Image 1 (tube, helix red, strand yellow):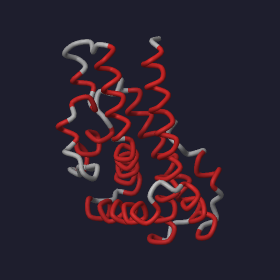
Image 2 (tube, rainbow, N blue to C red; image 1 turned 135 degrees about the horizontal axis):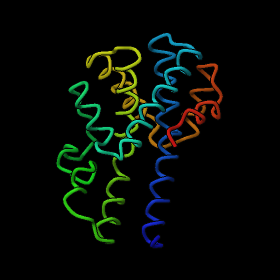
Image 3 (cartoon, rainbow, N blue to C red; image 1 turned 120 degrees about the horizontal axis):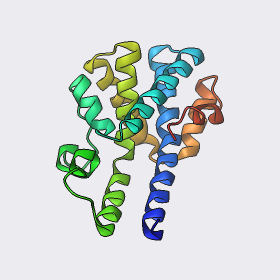
Image 4 (cartoon, one colour; image 1 turned 90 degrees about the vertical axis):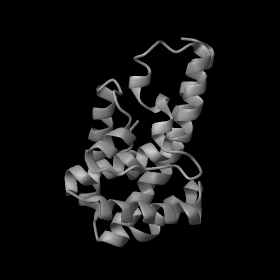
Length: 182
């Protein structure tokens, strides 16, 4: 594999890991404090979210997680300051079916996809909530709002999210990581 593409893929993996260490603890915290869920229920829920992620991956990424969420719930998750994911064809595989992208296109696509990782993780969580807990759009939107509020307070400070877990739940930081999608 081309070194540039390999590095771009590695950058995506790093960004995914960084965001997992933020999104999953934030979700666990919000479900614990806002919805009264406890460790076993959250653990089972995260198992479902991992299955949803795997389903998307095994489908050859026919659709992005964002498309899957919108198709099943009507909810579109957007990144702050960005357009709808519909404007970014590279997030769905159907754009790839038209022609094989060049090396430069792949590098550009990977760089752009990196920006959407937080939204894809949230879409995964929302889709799992719909499937496992039969949550509707209003409850899902409320949860996303709570997570966004946390992100507004703590930004990308992974230590603050670990602290939230330690102080407010029975989870340890490493327990949440094992549910991660990668």
